[in-house]
Length: 231
Length: 231
Image (cartoon, rainbow over all chains, first blue to last red; front, side, top):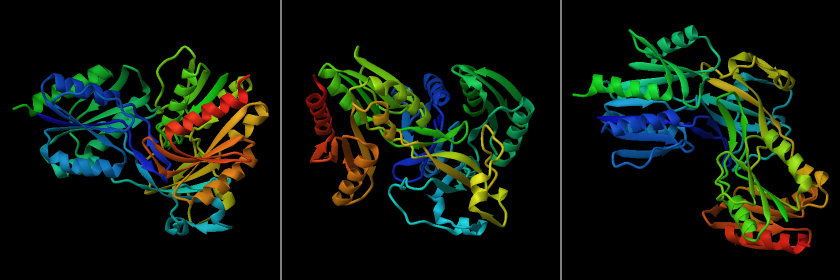
């Protein structure tokens, strides 16, 4: 079976020398890739530039990913050919529209002015101002396109929160199941991830499974995929 | 002789899952470290988390650096003991003060309001708003402290610009010589850096030397250091 795994984090450029990065090591994506490879499946790994990677393997295709645009283009091309998508990458929710010295605004300004303003494009933003202001816009929610590109694919989505109760995690996961049409959402909290320890709830329409380690998570992803897609 | 080299880029957190990173591979810092080690000197390498690193060596101390605060603390401690400082790291000029949904401002807002506003601290900023606004403040210019911490140290500063003429590069380098009290500024343009090719002007009060490769730059740093500091 053909499995697409996204892992690591994206980076959205601010100018030519800096960008906004999502922190993610890619450890879980690497482990999942290894388990699927060991079980004889074909793995396409779309990984952020700083993500840890599995060893080379004849059945592994590694595609480095920089920003959300990059990720969108690669997924649009690959998803239709896949049996399973494990979308564990930390994808930027926002990308910079502009960053400019606050002195370019004087007195008071309207929200519309902020939205419409466009400073001259420069290769590197000067460091003369005491304060800068940045406008950011939402990136497309790539996960919402996956079932449109391939209605039959088995889709695992991920949701990371920070410092919430389990009930909130479950609530957000169930919401995301609906909005993304994912078959499963792996909901986890940064406060419960450290090294191999990785507490998570694997949530589907009818079930919730609590998992405790990266290895348990990767095993579950493989087991469910083989049950539902191997024919 | 004792040499402190900074390399790679810093990352300033926005929240617990994302930050602003300066892109820099750390290749030049790595090469300089190798040349100084080969010549028998003691090297302290302060490197960004994504920087490439030299092989382990009995005379190499590697200290990983995340943000500007981290860098400041380490340098304050180490610079007084050094003979030479090569400050090649791409250091964030700005750090986020806050990022918040644009809907938190309505109608018109004054520059003072923007500066004074402080949203509630959260672990991960929600992705519900269509637009976010970020206020950034200038970070301390660490290079300006180096000669205060150690007036006798031989200081090489770096200035990276993007897409400018050589005359502008030289002008900015000379300005930086004065403001930072550096002995030399290595001025370079991102458009003229690619793999081993690395065009740069090494500028001191009385001299300008044009260099073409990373290797030539590292050799010059070593040669000048040995001439001026070996006794």
